[in-house]
View (cartoon, rainbow, N blue to C red):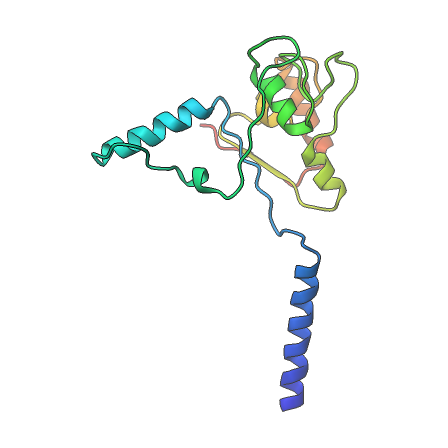
Amino acid sequence: MIKRTLATTFFYLASLSILFAQNKPKYIFYMIGDGMGLNQVNSTEVYLADLENRIGLKPLVFSLFPVATFASTYSLSNGITDSAAGGTALAVGSKTKNGVIGMDSTQTKPLKSIAYAAKEKGLKVGITTSVSIDHATPASFYAHQTSRNKYYEIATDIPKSNFDFLEDLAF
């Protein structure tokens, strides 16, 4: 009985050590506050502090995350980006022109998003959004279209993605 318990314990410990030795996360969440910048975050934190009659900030939960970064937000065609170019930059790591989804600025070459890269590595991929799934920001992760206004064509890219879960929470 003791040998069996030790063997079972060893098996579980060995399994856990193998899992942790790979340093592979179980879940990765990529959250985008579309249209949200530092000014909106700061204003919200000041407002929340004011509700408690305090001067200063009441940090939002994500403001306390251990890692944060910044990105330039202009597109290749305008000093002010739109959701298509901004979403594409976030999804593929490359700037494009306003209105373009998941393609280079010449609108001839589809670009691979981080979601496709994760899928190729054998990970499950899901997209959940508070707007329609065919809107520019969520579409930037699965679609390749020359115009954000091609809603039908964007929707036809959904099954081509072979992603595991897509849901819009828009009502």
